[in-house]
Length: 213
Image 1 (cartoon, rainbow, N blue to C red):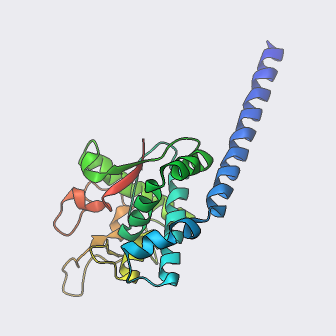
Image 2 (image 1 turned 30 degrees about the horizontal axis):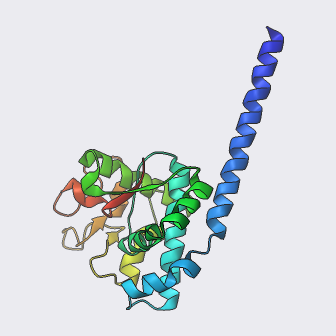
Image 3 (image 1 turned 135 degrees about the vertical axis):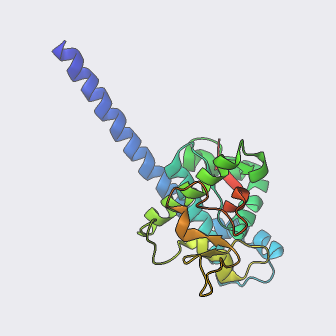
């Protein structure tokens, strides 16, 4: 019995070590992937108003998003940025390259799921909460008392993306009204309406697409 328990413990330790190595390897693969080299011309055609430096910021956001998806495993992660979602769309069009990237980054294919194709509004809400928690964790921000927005949640407003998703740390203006956009500071609180738009529609809490199975 003791030998069996020892063998089981050794197998468990070996499996945990493999998982840690695999996680580091996949994270390094995402960090090293040349997104701008492969996608810059396509993003420039889609957003001619963006400078080279601004497109580089979008690719940094895409790298962030893929790290969030890797950390989340097979759980849904909503997309908080329209600009980054557009870059992701362009990447998917290179089907073989995207498939190879997914294998190296996640060990599986990362599907792109429009919000309207999600099983329920609750799935979209949980997806944006997960994106918020993981993005805050990645940038060392307290998700329940943020002092700034993570890059993915700040990018569209910073770049002035037409039709982009604008998030606010403080959801109330001086007159007590909710500003246009989304209440980022409420997402991490876990309430049922925590990521609603100013109209209270739960479908407005994400960027419209998500990654996962």
